[in-house]
Image (cartoon, rainbow, N blue to C red; front, side):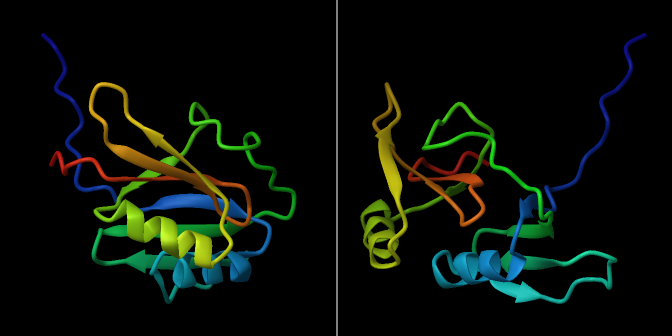
Length: 133
């Protein structure tokens, strides 16, 4: 008899380490359009940020000793991705905020992707691929 897989609901949040959660909050809110929501009174600093349009919640968790998992824009390092229907608009916004990024195209499909790092060096991807689910 084969065991059934665990029943799951929708993804709830992505947790990222931050040496300065207030700085991370400004980046995610000012550049990417998230907004802060209340969080429980944990014994450590952090921020909860939400972007309702795309259904993504981020938890920034304070870790003074956080070091990013790599340098540059190595897309083989761990990262999270958010769909972006207007890559040209995203390029303009990132440039206006002085955010460094690299643009790539998915082989075989031609979809454009932007890879960037938040102020703590966490890697993220913005992509124009069609919605799959």
